[in-house]
Length: 107
Image 1 (tube, rainbow, N blue to C red):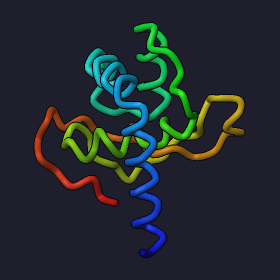
Image 2 (image 1 turned 45 degrees about the vertical axis):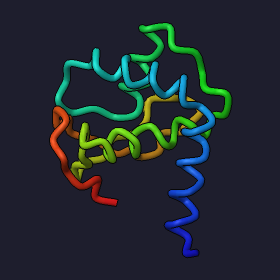
Image 3 (image 1 turned 90 degrees about the horizontal axis):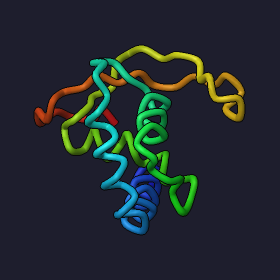
Image 4 (image 1 turned 90 degrees about the vertical axis):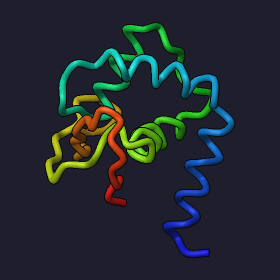
């Protein structure tokens, strides 16, 4: 098993163990009106919808991957700096909404 496969298996494991939470995240995602978004936009939508934090913080890492796998978003070539203080201004991916089209997640 290569590193990419281990990463994907880990993401799936975390999401499976947080399935009820992921359903609530999906509902919050649907409230986002912008066509371009980041994980921070999803987290903000979750906050506004009173979605609790996941049981494990790594679940956030699988959110965008899961949405992309479902064809709801696709990566753009753009990155922005995170505004979350604990992220120390790291670059984060900008994604584009696909409205459920079946697209590759580019990963």
